[in-house]
Length: 290
Image (cartoon, rainbow, N blue to C red):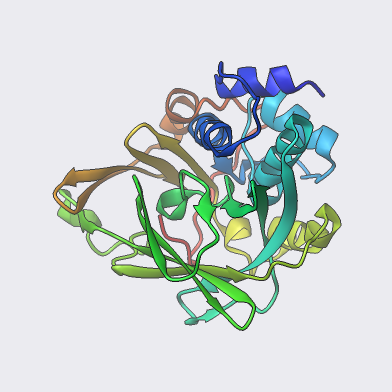
């Protein structure tokens, strides 16, 4: 594996030294703009391995995307290679349809320590809940980013991440009631502890999301990519572009239903993805919002 090939994949031409906050912010931003969050391997009959060499080959060399345990494992490797003090953490994802957090920690994220300050770095959440910059590990402070306001709150050793959202404007009224839209203004995302994890801790959840009918990622083909002022998503046949702060405290959300013969073109033009295997587009009823 070659760190310069990773930087080339990101389109990052800056220096990787010093290993400070500014460099971390630049690398994270470029990663998010270049590498899509996606689960298309599940729907192409391609097994997902969490071996770092396999992840590097897929996300960097084949210019694909991946989900959290692939995205943040790759970022973990890159930051370690550069010289950052970084460890893996595990988060319990909030389940809006059940109004509770998943009792099993399934989301991989990173803790980065720089000059005695601690940050949470995450390039693997996707959709409109994806932070664009590291979050300082400080309780009860609003951290404004382009996607919205993020807030970390600590309680008894558990750190809860929430997002304060803008109002969503959906011009096409036929999509106003789609289950893909989360209309809440305050959204719980996940909670985590600071106990260090290894990639092996995510093997079971990786298998679950590939094989279980109870997983939203098994029931829906999903791809998401951040761009300069918003986020693009494709869930099943529904393509969405969300433009952040389109108006004062308003995000513009434009949705379109694709035909089967349009999916391949959209994947290439909007997400930079060219698949080697045949994709079976899936959008079974389930709980997933953009």
